[in-house]
Length: 70
Image 1 (cartoon, rainbow, N blue to C red):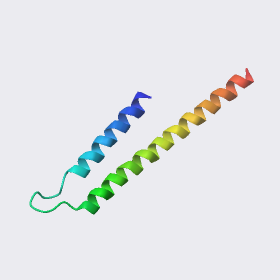
Image 2 (cartoon, helix red, strand yellow; image 1 turned 135 degrees about the vertical axis):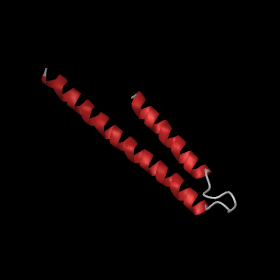
Image 3 (cartoon, helix red, strand yellow; image 1 turned 135 degrees about the horizontal axis):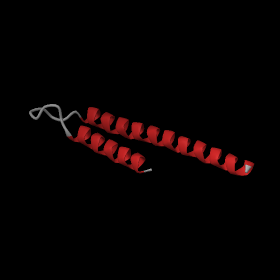
Image 4 (cartoon, one colour; image 1 turned 180 degrees about the horizontal axis):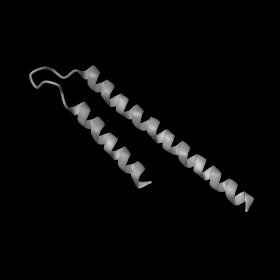
């Protein structure tokens, strides 16, 4: 479970860093690109979280099936 939380926190940090860093200091930040990167990072995070939850659900179902057999 801690690995999931650590990956989640790492993704948040990466997403925030990507959103906060403009490409060039002389130019205005590209807000569309920043928004896209932020939303993409959130999407990837949610997708992985759903996959983790599916794995946990499958494991719980297997454990329940094993206990029902015993």
